[in-house]
Image (cartoon, helix red, strand yellow):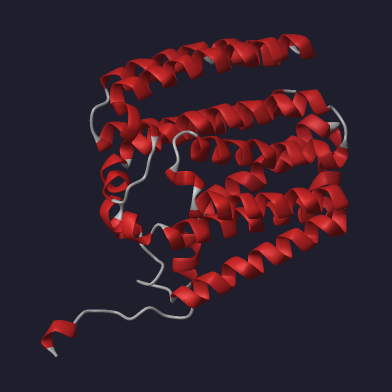
Length: 293
């Protein structure tokens, strides 16, 4: 009896646990990004109230958020053992919430998100279906493969912005530039997270870049990617011929230099966790820069 004292059994429902499981802060950022994209890039921004009250934009954003939430759920479902090593305090599946409840939520979120997409536009519904399928493949197999898993998450992150251009079909190049920015920052961050989670990933046979090539070589890849992406974004901004965008991406050189310096010195989980958070802040800065158009 004494051994069972203090041990809590998983429950069917907990608002706090579901918010933690679905990364509510990330979902809010997705929604904010899509609304800012519609208001400031699709525009004109003087009609911001039109988008704030738009049922279509609400459906578009909600469908994306539901698909993303389902992705976070299935990812944690498959990663329970790894998370007990890397982040034991964050384990929800089977510890706080019952596994069957978690899988039911994953299915419902996907079905509703895909249905919303088809209601808005057949192509959007197809994109949502493919995104949901890809998130399942990522959680089940792809994330354990070198670079492919990182690329998958980055691609889906950029897609969350690109679908706004797909639906409204206005100022596509400008919106796709921000989608590339989101893709680039996310790809850099995902590789950083692999360095942070090296111990747990290695224990369960994952073949991430840091495991296959070591920390030093993975850092070199990060440097190359950073330089490539900054150059690409500056060229896209010049093509669009928007001075504000050109200046923003040129200014990005300074935080990128700081990032490279911190990455060169990083050698433990705390350092890599800081760099992961730093990437999030860069992403937020990019999103907020939309307001200056």
